[in-house]
Length: 579
Image (cartoon, rainbow, N blue to C red):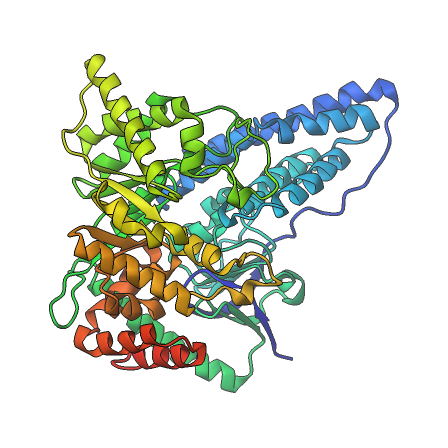
């Protein structure tokens, strides 16, 4: 019987092949009590498992294949670092000692607690770090139980083998990088999990978050992985198989065509030059940006360097990270958003506590201004790094002009400090403002008198405009990028910025959504910033677009407040020429 499962699409391709099942994740853990005299030995057994796990991960990190994605080493380093986190290496010991139980049971209890804590986080990227923690926990558990920690993929696999797993860690990826794997699917994970990031960088069709795929598939069974639609088909019927073979041929042809435009300019059919930039979270992601053919870094989310650690990164540590990215981009622009912390991105070392409504509390530039020494250390690091490339500084979550003026005053103070210390920095550094609150969009004209550019963060702009949490299943259907109010705010920001003779970009998810490309072009946008994986598909849409065809349609979209008419016009916008 044919079965169709739906998950999260990660790799944009299609694979047809035979399933190879990777062993289940954590086995059922038995619980047994300990005599008080046996507790110290059990603690030592747990600590030995930690030491063994660390040694394994460090050995894997030192043996990464040369052709592996650059992110692999960074993710393995993260897993090594997680082993030092007290919640993984220390709290289970407390459970062993207080409950006098076996180490496996203590580790399971702690894993369940951590899972609950991560599931309560609203921000996608941070919530997906749960899987990194659980992957490390699983490796510790296997060492406790004396089980093989590696995947054990057979060497005699066929070229069409599709890997089926409950989860895959960065350490697992080392073992199948050079294996003959056509695709992979997992039961868990999310769009911003490290499994997803590595899947995209490996350029393999992949679907994650299938929930029960691992239990429904038999070894060597025929399966179809549709990484475009996020679909897994088990034991497909002949008609379905024939249809997907045709789709696979079309996908392979389209991929060859995309690869051919990597080095060509992003130019519309009528000659308008469009700048396609990349978003990154960590310095290690800069290689993905370069390989995508991006013209620069449009959004470096610097706050991710502050998360997942017990202490604030020093000025020198930050400087080295920014210098590394600036040098790697070889003169191309690198736009660094100052730390957008607070709300659900609160590191352990931050002492401000949790507000009743954190999304409307001390976050973004408000937190920066409330912690001037921390803020100024980042500004000093950015200024120092400006000698090594085209660093641009951008302030997040601005609400009104006074906040911007205070941020600029802190920047001026940081410059004065460096001059007094005889530390050099670039004479001219471009300054920008994030437009992600409706109030900021409405008064963007006042910002433009103070800054060189603005960037529209559509993710937050949509949420704040519509009062919709897109991560809340109960209301996520109301999260609408083409709501007439959202479109009017974006169009107003673009038009006002152009009138002021300044530049504007969109760096939210709309920039990487091919269905929104012509809409944004018709509004006058000429600078897009997106996940590196989207650069080539968006470039293809740009090169197939004539502005004379889209501007009138977009004009009609902006003049109507009827959602159905807007949807019809969006379909018309994307109909011809075929994307």
